[in-house]
Image (cartoon, rainbow, N blue to C red; front, side):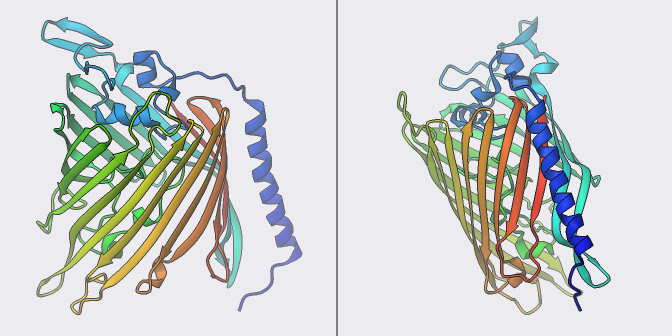
Length: 416
């Protein structure tokens, strides 16, 4: 039986909330506001971080084109051979370490969560202090013209390791033929890739096949060993790929595949909507589990519709809607078919040095009640430098749950 919280507990709650806001306000007030770019391509090309980013790591349209060109300057004749590099011989040009090596750090100095603990049968709130979420080291740049590399290694606070890495082979037949090979994401080229994003992850893009119980359970956006082809011309970008599932060892020997299209607003000089796009993505895979006598399979599919609307380099709206189907979600001998659909909308307004974001996530499923969620996440970020930002972020539970789980946090992110 749940006992009503005492006045002392309520006082502690307001004290902790006040402490969170006080720390955030201090960060927002004491730091200077001068802009200064310090990251690998800012160093190499002597440009501001805002050449490729709005609120890092969120890419602007130029940054997206820079990435798909294999980290070579877009809209010009690609030069991955000599630009910014030291000549060693007629056949070898080597980039400076600072031009391809960078790091990112994420900290949560204060995190307040409601109904997150159960003590003596009663739910209580909590305040977590000094959480270093992750440290990322990343290496990216051209090896030589039209051949480039991207490696991102993330070290998380619980000791877990997470990585993306792949080689780009670009402009093999003008812009019509390009490849990524390695550990990559199937949704990198969609209008809502859920990487290098405005703020929080999309919940619907992080639903795992088979509820994460299979040998090869994957989300639609996580890294996985595979090969992806892509091409683009004018307003159209198209792509397709194949992967093992989550592991390079591919224990079940099954392959997953995907395909997608992205239509961008035609580029026009001084267009207010430059970089806006719509897209469709289809993913089909097989997840497996071994019983005592046979291998059980779950054939799953994901249909994803997404858009990105940009206006005057001030407003940035992304939305994604996904329909998912698992024909044996529980990986049982008697198949259990499960369906779900979900939506994420993330909208931002940028007026330096402040960046405002509002994100909404919802997942519905008549077959998997535990998957359902409904949350609203506002945040505001203050840029002390182009490569250092502090934010006050909240996440409100809008579900029908009796004891709702809200969060409010002070966040710090930097890249260098």
